[in-house]
Image 1 (cartoon, rainbow over the protein chains, first blue to last red):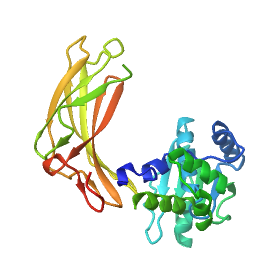
Image 2 (image 1 turned 135 degrees about the horizontal axis):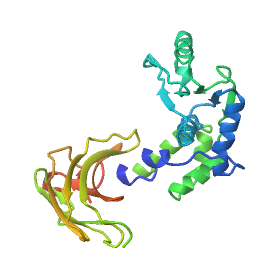
Image 3 (image 1 turned 60 degrees about the horizontal axis):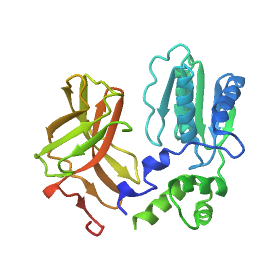
Length: 180
Length: 121
């Protein structure tokens, strides 16, 4: 199958909406905002690699924008210095994806630069940088539900188990399975 | 009719050749003053999506019409391509007032996609 026809190409996978078992999709973002406000607009989305932190951060940032907050999303990468934050707008919420990629000093440079922000939201592999707003978890049932939105595939749960719950890698395996 | 529709004379084009087509819409629903035609490539596949800057042209449309014929030159590259890791896909998008329609087309040698690692189709 050609990449443009592959049901697990990145644009299809990235188009899947973040979801949580037992929470109605339309209720998730308002619930997160309420929790975020309760934490003084300082919080972290915590979870291992491939557990949906980035997806949730981007979805939440979009929701905040629709709610009228000015939002800026930054992406930290291992070995790269974070782009200078510049002037932080009054009332702005700064979202940082991949806080664990920053060095100790990099993290504190970021905190200093964002000191004027109304809110700070980060993703991190471990708790502790900021109060945990949400712990991202995956289950075989959830993965199966996501896969079924894109294509009918066998042995989905085994794929999920093989990647230890890392949904990104599990989707990658399904991509290559269709590509071959 | 549910939204505008594109019809092209040929959906597979050699680089530098003329893309000729028309866009049709329901004139009871849409009364455009202009039609905008955009042509752009993007990648699709396992990795992140990349997209080229669109080539775009605007054409004035006479009042009360329900279709418009357009033409533009197919760019020299990149060629429509599919390997294992990614495809390069050319898309034509036509904007008619508040609605738009997108279709895939092929731009490559002999009007065919360059295919590597798959059986030719």
